[in-house]
Image (cartoon, rainbow over all chains, first blue to last red; front, top):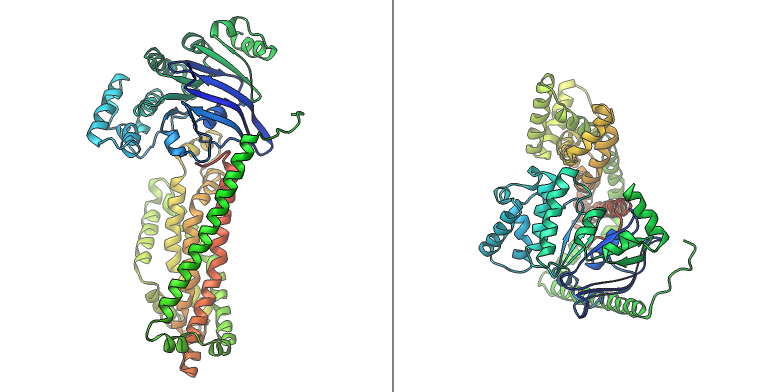
Length: 244
Length: 283
């Protein structure tokens, strides 16, 4: 089966700092892939390059059969096929939670408001935020905001969900509720590519773990393998710090 | 990194070539559409029935040249008033804005007065303030006061009301968390304002401030009603002498030329700030 998302030899630099140095990665449909690595290893940049928020300097990105890194491709349409959740939620503060969730459905996918709101309310109810639908995001706790942001990302039924360290800004008590939601989505067969520092979560939920170091993929494989017997020296060092 | 620099792949080179072709095409389209637009506008204007007469009385090169020295001298007065006003408005407006943001019940009357001032002088037409200041203040002191001082005073009174609102909005637009972070470090109210809030507020304020500045650049032309021989009054005198309106156009062009650098400078400055503080692209 061909991959749903395929990155080939991605290169990206900011000024003279090379952040991605030839990253190739495949994600199949219904697969959950966790990208791990130290801060600054390029995890976030990789995710941002994949949904074209950041232009790449070289390489190719295929979503389905389409080369979305081709300048002839409509980038907005390509991005609308992804769902993205950011570290600091990035909810729109001037909109209610429900409007945040339904914005893309209404403005991009042209779903009529009643229909979009019905679906939005259903999803919000599922994550326990039905009573917060009319509130503005600033009145919600971090965990609630991040759950709302996840709902916003999945409300348009994206082909793949990109999660960029979505629990890093949350305190440990709130991390659980967000990860639980991601676990449910994974169990339902959502295709997920996530950058994360939550090693135990990556081990539990991911089908495959990718270790990124200084802009290169040093190793990847099933979590049991990578966590138990890391082959690369850098991976060992990195994981040792988490066990300590 | 000691590795050799990355050599772009054939695919990337092809993409770059495509982007370059696209941008070349965009330039061509832009130039062609500009020329076409200009031709249409020009033909429309020269074919209006009264164009010959209008050209003669508004755009006469000889009259323009003859009027230029006098209008230019007047324009220098405008520049002086502008230069002084910029300083006084900056001081008065900042003071007003800070007064309005003072906390605590003791400062209630100060806050109210500052608010009343801005409400009042944003409402009064500048031309009326000019008359009141220009003819009222000399009468008050029973003295001859230089027009440059009176003009500056009137412009300061009106513009400090506008500018203080811009500054206040800028201060309030800085997220409260920034204030919290600064206070948590032990900085006091004033130091927080000075080191954390104002620098950030300044960024948010720059575009509207520059807008007010450009507006002020041309409103200094209103001091002509006090009898000052500025660019506008000089143009009026020249017009009376030559029975031709071209001197007004000359004065107008001088004000436009004054405004253009400011506008460009603002764009450049805000672009630079954005570049320095953000990594990566803006999609």
